[in-house]
Structures are given as structure tokens and as C-alpha cells.
Amino acid sequence: MLQAADTVGVFQVESRAQMATLPRLKPREFYDLVVEVALIRPGPIQGGSVHPYIRRRNGDEEPDCGHPLLENALSKTLGVPLFQEQLMQMAVDVADFTPAEADQLRRAMGAKRSSEKMERLKVRLYDGMARNGITGELADTIFLRLKAFSNYGFPVLSPNQHLSEPQPAGT
Image (cartoon, rainbow, N blue to C red; front, side, top):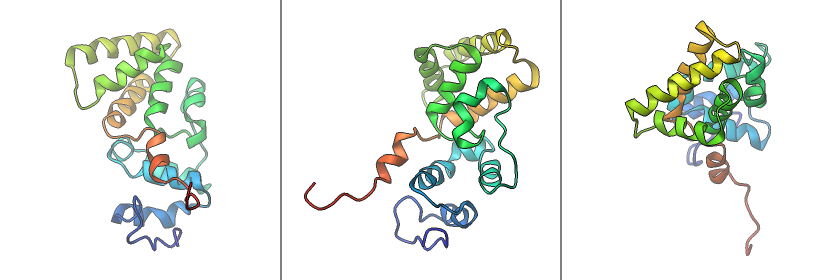
């Protein structure tokens, strides 16, 4: 049913974009549905994550995290950021942000943007990346991925909350 995109009336996977992606993603297990729902969001779309993830998932392209320091955050999703927590982990791993700073970055890039706070955190991010040997185009790419994704990405728990496995009656 899902691999054939026969999903009219199925919550979270009935949009045209979801239905167009399902046959290409070929979900085989529950986590594939979590990824499917997270993948078709403005953040991953704007961040250029959709097509690389599908190509990598189908074995048409090798997974590539872009830098060894990104492997912790991105290896489970084949080098492609899909969840808010991954972006926060990227800031921790590549720029030595504390978890609290990473959350501040997520918030500053979000709907209630503060230009002053964003600029301060951007400087902090670039300084931290430079200390870890990440400069130039790679640093810019990481920043743009964070920025494109942050406002519209799912937290990893959100699709899980909607796509929970059915519970027996009376539980």
C-alpha cells in the first residue's frame, strides 16, 4: 500500500508530494515512514536534502556526511540532515556548541528571529568551526544547511508521535 502510494486518507502521507515520494523511497520499516514524513517538509526541501537522501537510500549514491565531525549527527540519515536535533548536534560537533547554545541557535534561526542574536551565534558558529578546521565553502555549506532547515524541520519525535504503532484496544 505505502510503496504504491495508495495513501489517500492516510494521515501525514496523503499529500501529492508524499505520494510522489513514497514509490521512490520504498518504505520497508517504521523508521522509513518517520523519515518520509520528515523529508517532505519545507526545511529539508529548501536545504536540498530530499533527492540526495532518496538516491543514497536506494543505493544510487554513496552516503556522505561532508566531514568526519558531521558523522555523529548525520550517519543515521545517510549524511542528510532531516531532524531539528541533527542540526543542533551538528553545531555541537563542528563548532563545540554546548547543547544550550545549539538550542539558542535553533531558536534564533526559527520563526522569532533576532538579527542581533543570530549574528552573534553565526560568529560563534564560524569561530568554532574554524577551531575545528572547517572553513571556507564547507563552513558556508554547513551554515546554509542549518539556516535553510531550521525554521521548518521536524523534531525527531514529531513524526513518531503521529506515526505511532497502533495500540490494542483498552490500553
